[in-house]
Length: 150
Image (cartoon, rainbow, N blue to C red):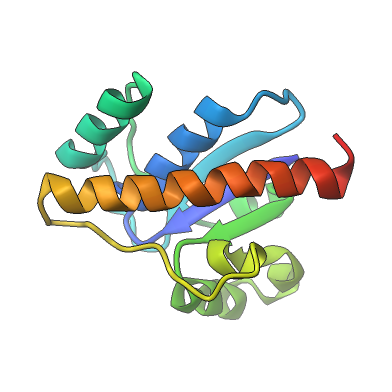
């Protein structure tokens, strides 16, 4: 099962989500990817995202380039999880034939909250976002395993 995490620029939230998911997932049947709705070509993970992920997971995302979302990527994934409800709404408008597999991460888990965007802020805000993601992604892994029986 391929899971795609989507944020705006693919330099903070979605790449942290991808790294966290990969670090906590112990099932080879689950794969994580990430992309952004407005990714700049050749942009890299933000320095604070790099530092938070390295400090907490010992996982290096420093050279990870942002990926722009496109129809092919959405088509190839089984589940698309956005960081906010507004990104989810935008994705379903842009990719209507895939709307049944596009959710905000919060709503997929039965929550109403969005993932805080730390872009351009201090390390403390990146840490808040990291731990918000970590909590949700641990729940997500458990939900998928239970729902899919894997």
